[in-house]
Image (cartoon, rainbow, N blue to C red):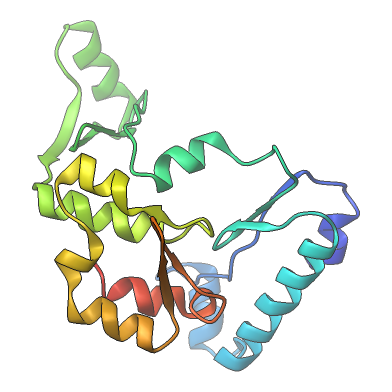
Amino acid sequence: MPPDQALACGPEHLACYELTIEEETPFAGLVERGELILPEEEEVLAMAELSHDLLAQAGLPRYEISNYAAPGNHCRHNLNYWRNGSYLGLGAGAVSCLSGFRFSTVREPEPFAGLVQKGEPPLAEGECLPLAARFRESVVMGLRMTEGISVARLQRRFGLTPPGYYGKMLEELQQQGLVVLAADSLRLTEAGLPVANQVLARLV
């Protein structure tokens, strides 16, 4: 849906994503057969910039790479996720993360219900992330927000800071004008936001 059509609905919050083609889907088949031509990267960036400008003018400033909202209407669930907070998923196939322990439940409803009725944990898989991995994940997720991440908060939580952990790599990103470290905040710049995926991939 074009941004002007979406804005006609009077939203207070809007998520705006580039179309992702998943393998083995009808869309993927259309692309493979040449029946669906995807736009070039320059056109995608131009559309993203246009969407950003239209939404900002409509009173929905960006607060995360793909999310826009009127003041006071930021999604609390999403903010918790981007701040790498704990969350609990309920039901078959649900994913949870509690204090660094990430786990998922059995996906099929019948086996899930059977385990619950027996009083057994319906866990499918789980992993306890090492501290350094949790730190990197917090940096990458936090940089998705326009406010960036608090260096002091990372220090309190992990005993690590981005300058100390990434060193020269972070300096290079700053010199390239893609991230800025000011006072207590590390964030992507306006130049860094359109190429966020490439920037964040270097910090994983």
